[in-house]
Image (cartoon, rainbow, N blue to C red):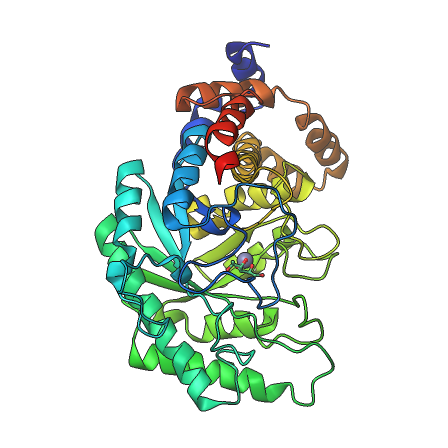
Length: 416
Ligand code: RNT
Ligand code: ZN
């Protein structure tokens, strides 16, 4: 079917494909840097992410330094449609020789090369404090019983807020600064409340000593259920982060939900409306958990589509969205591009839903029609609208983009 015919078919159910495409073009989605180098950071000796996260696979071509990561990202950006941001980690700081300082002192100037990169590629940037893969993990961070360790990570969080302010000033748009700690216990805790109280106190100290400049920065707190080696207990649980964000809403704190961070039968698509019934904004890490928080490449699958439908129904401008996965078993650039494109597809699919009609069918309790409609919609000529959207964005609409990645692999990645 041609795009024009697809447009007519959608128009019959009250969906304007032109409006869907222009709405999608306005939704920023952040590309997470850590897909390019297996969650390694540049400010410490490489040696595994720790903190309960791990990239699996040893496909050749990992970016070993900021320049390689930037080269790879430029390739990724050129193959993806839509509005992009970058999602950086404090550990991506770039130090000139002899200028290295530890994470409690990272200066904003260490992010100047990233600001330049963003400017060149016309993308915004968000940030994460980096609490893992560092000798000051004992192995805890903000929840450590050792006040010196906690102070180090409190200072780090304050530096991250400063870097976020710098990024916001340079890009003239708000910067999200995400807090996720890998703290937790492998086995049954002897004390569950203590670490949570310390986590709370550490965050309170940060906010007291460095209040969030709310015109520029949003601080998000990312919840998690468990990680590798911290299977039994994580202080920053779903409830903890929800409570912390709601208690500190006025100070600029927002909750972040990662789609891999809940019990396997729970879905984030069913959670976001509960948060948005109370809060104006929330943040998301879009990932794909396979049986556990495995961080597989985002797919155009049922849950991703359902999450996208919720984003569109609740209002896309109420979300700060980033991708978060890391697959080292396949070409990393292809993994990056594939996941980003798949999420774009999910969003476009969602913008092409007759939202009001479906809500009306629900409210009039016509569940038969609701079910039939939702199933038939799956085979509407979505692919033709996708092709048109890609064409307008100047990128390939089908798998032919892989050819360009293969060429890049041959010329660049395979030589690393
Ligand atoms: C870990 C969290 C966190 C990280 C990144 C690297 O489970 O999802 O967001 O993936 O900070
Ligand atoms: Zn995450």
